[in-house]
Image (cartoon, rainbow, N blue to C red; front, top):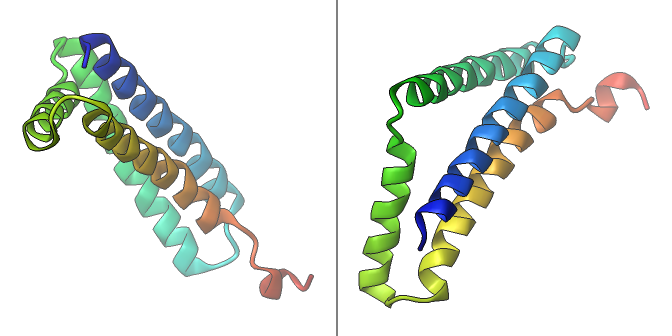
Length: 119
């Protein structure tokens, strides 16, 4: 797998982190309608802010630990399955799950509960 692909996957992960921060801030400011969901959304926001700080540090240091981890995982999967689509698919699936988690959690926590809103 080319170095450029690892970099693109890293950028996709970073963009998902930034989007999740905006979604979490929106839902924390708006309120979710439940104290438990407010706390969970606030906790998720804190974790994503920490992730954003790590992204910032990575850009300042010019050191990409996430990219190195992806390369290592790719090479391990190459040893197991050989070169081909299976090794690449593993990374794409992991990044997709990460994006769905980062974006989905604030959306699910901020979703209005139909029972609470009376609709």
